[in-house]
Image (cartoon, rainbow, N blue to C red):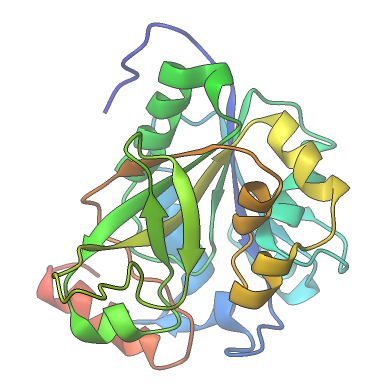
Length: 253
């Protein structure tokens, strides 16, 4: 996908990678069909032609050493970063770009077209929004009920109203709801990252453990865009098998 607007902007993609995950320690280096997850994610991201640079951001030396061995650009961040977006914000303090994309390091099959979508949305709306995200419809009941999959509520302009790990919207009348889930690829202006780090975690952000809710709680508008791209987040060890099955079914290595 090429830029829909004939305008050059500088875009940095940051892949936050945390070793000490409470639900899956060492996750970025977990092997998926013999290849560490962080390398799989990086290899998917660099397929986008709209990025000027891609780097991994981590506070862990094991991840840094692996990235150095594999010639993957890596940036060491503070161990005080509470979220992936905090890591991106720290990188933005040192590397100046027009637009920053955060691809979570646990997205080993993410399609590069989601990155292209975010860049094009930024080019289309520019100063109307400071942050951008993607969503996808879900129909599987297990996914709808899963607290590892974040559901979203949008207004008529596809602006984010709320995110929850509960299945929302709830239908009191029995009408069948159409559920949407967040795809964990975010786009930020530098202003967005500066605003994000000015404040501690907000109440709803703490309750749901969803970092984008900080922007909602602070009164900012986030632009959401529908995607049909594949995305399998690895949150717990059993998710590795899901990815391996997906790779086999799709004839991928």
